[in-house]
Amino acid sequence: MSINKHSVLVEPWGTSIDLNRNLVRIGWLAIGVLFLAAASKMTIAVPGSPVGMNLGTFAVLTIGAAYGPRLGLSTVLAYLIVGAIGFDVFQSSYADLNGIAYMTGSTGGYLMGYVLATCAIGYAARLGLDRQMVSMAAAMFVGNVLIYIPGIVWLGVLYGWDKPILAWGLTPFVFGDAIKLVLATILFPTTWKLIGQARG
Image 1 (cartoon, rainbow, N blue to C red):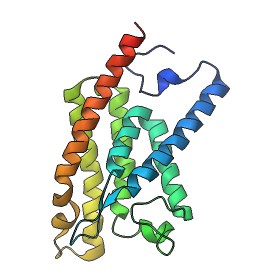
Image 2: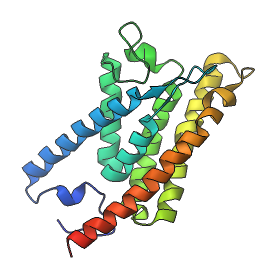
Image 3: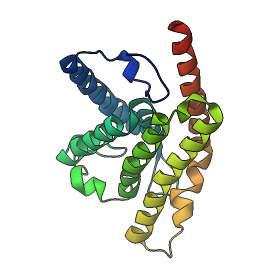
């Protein structure tokens, strides 16, 4: 499959045979779910906040950019379904707090934001915005905002707007997310450049 401005990162590794292409997509989906689950478990507790810091947002933005809107969305939805069933894939889930009960807790809004961010980043990648650092940085920023908005709104609904919602759900994570944004901004344009060089 030739690379063009509408390709997303995983597509050059597919095949021209429909059955094999579908199997490749299923494989990428499984890898994405495992990657997101592992990243979500890499958590640092934030004192005074019901929400911890983890690599889940980086994984979501990476999956969206690498997979595109359709496969990216399918992957995130599969992750949420696996978690809803009761598998221990979420940030702070454990045997007695898992599934739907966990998804409607303090991080529920951020999980909803994962869906929005994946679609947005996926469409940006489909438009070729992941080829240049400036456009990729802008896309990643929008993706982060789309995760934060429902996350903060849900904290307000859950705990009340008289609580320090921004101090709980935004300010402790800005620096860490800025680092993750920079990493993703460098990763994708650099990878595309290397692929282009490898294919002559």
